[in-house]
Length: 230
Ligand SMILES: O=C(CO)[C@@H](O)[C@H](O)COP(=O)(O)O
Image (tube, rainbow, N blue to C red; front, side, top):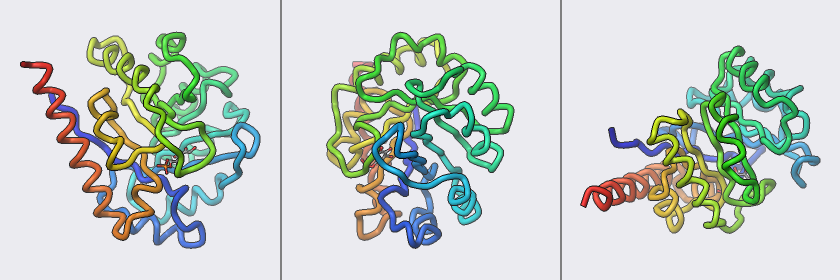
């Protein structure tokens, strides 16, 4: 069954004074990616639960909450209870990631686990059996508009192989530096869901940019499939 690429615009690159307009501007997106940063786990401070609730109320697009915070064990369930579709925590920050995945799911959301660019994949394979999504960071978390770190695609390939072999059942997501020039290599490596901030909100027509990125990813996935079967 061919994979269908998903595009998740990151509102980090949108105008924070007009968030409802930003959610409306990406109609047709698969998920809306919302970066929660606490100024401790990452060197940037963004928004918390009250603003995420306002974003949730402004859109029907499933909200993908990426918690770049210390102590996600304390905060993550609140985002799931508020109605986020997927709540992602960092393996580098979670104290009890198995319990956390269970609690996020019990609160009605998918549970995501993220790894920073220098965090290896292999030690967390068993842990990922408790999760629904794996978010591979392709920039150091904290800011939009950074350059894509292509080395992380090795981790994507390893995760894809485990998923294709039936050893893991995670959706593979990538975040950071995804644009028209980088999305194809990420798609070929095995990504399912592509987070894109500046490439979407920096475009004159964000909804059109979402469609164009999806088409590029779809084409790259098809070509990768054809190459494998040749
Ligand atoms: O989590 C982050 C950054 O830490 C991302 O979600 C960024 O918002 C992606 O922005 P671009 O790299 O696509 O501009």
